[in-house]
Amino acid sequence: MLYETFNSFKKEFFTDRIDNEITQNLNPKFELREYQKEALGRFIVYLSDDCPIQRQQLSPYQLLFHMATGSGKTDNGGEYFIFV
Image 1 (cartoon, rainbow, N blue to C red):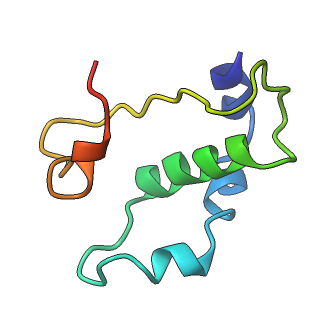
Image 2 (cartoon, rainbow, N blue to C red):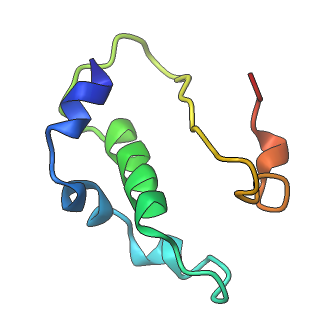
């Protein structure tokens, strides 16, 4: 499964994938937290051509981000998420 495969890698495998172009476009008042960097890195790896697993379906993909209450979903684009 994707979760087990990704958990077998070190956290730096994902956090090192985030391009400066992405971080420079964020509000400079708010620095990305480590778990946010890892989540974004996992997303980038999954969509990349060198993903360690073979995706079963062609795009569009359905991915789920678990976001805590008070994490700024509404203020930071949460209106574009489908809540289940």
